[in-house]
Length: 212
Image (cartoon, rainbow, N blue to C red):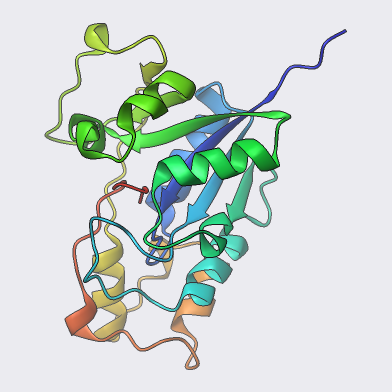
C-alpha cells in the first residue's frame, strides 16, 4: 500500500520575535487546516524588508524552537540560513522538496500577501508546483471562487499581535509575558538577549515574501 506524503505547511518569516499569533495560527492549521505539520521557517533576511533591523538570527531561531518544543506538529526550520541571501520562497520550497521527498509542502501566507503575490519571485511556478493555504487578514478580501485549483482559503481565527509591539514594549520595560510562549519570552527578556533599539522597530505583518 502506497504511503501518503506528509502534508507539511511552510510558514515563513522573520519571527522577530515569534508570538502567540504565529503559534495560534499554526496550531489551528495543524488541527483544522488539513496539514499534518507546520514548519516555522525562520528567515535571516526578507527581500521586501532589506533595511529591517532584525534580532540576532540565532536568538530568533532559538525562540521558535523553544515555542514549538512541546507540540510535535510544529517544527522550527533553519533551511534559509544555508541558502543564498536574500532568501526567496521559491528557493526555500525547492530546497525542502529536494531534501524531504516524502513530504508534500504547502505554502502558508496571509490574504495581504496573496493579493500581492504576483510580485513574488517565480509566483506562477509556486502556484503551479505547490499548494498554497491563505489565512485571512483584516482589510484584505480574497474571492475564494477566483482562486486557482492549488490555492485555498482557510477561515482561521484572527488574533492580531504585532512583533513590533512586543519589541517596543520590552524596550520600554513592560511585562508582556502572555503575548509570547513562556520559554520564548524568557529567552527574549534575558539580559544577554540582543538589544531592542527603537531605530530597529518596523511594523511586522503576519506574512511577507518569505513569510512572517
